[in-house]
Length: 108
Image (cartoon, rainbow, N blue to C red; front, side):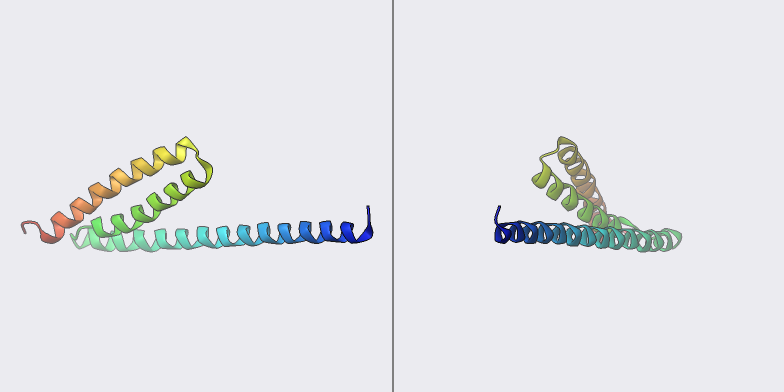
């Protein structure tokens, strides 16, 4: 094997590892962002519940994120569990959205 070819293969290998590491860091950042969003949502839901307000709006936001996440996981991996969770969280999200509409525009 020629020295140039070895260097080309090594450069490609290093580049692939760098891309995988960067993807790992991005996923880790997404995970931290989601965890922070959940903590804030729980605090807001507690405040709203204490004040007798509906928490459906926050539920809709959280479950929209979760549903889209499972949908993308299914599209990437074709795993049945991701599809089932996408359907389940989407149904819950629709129910939360209907509850939000009723609490916002329904009879007082």
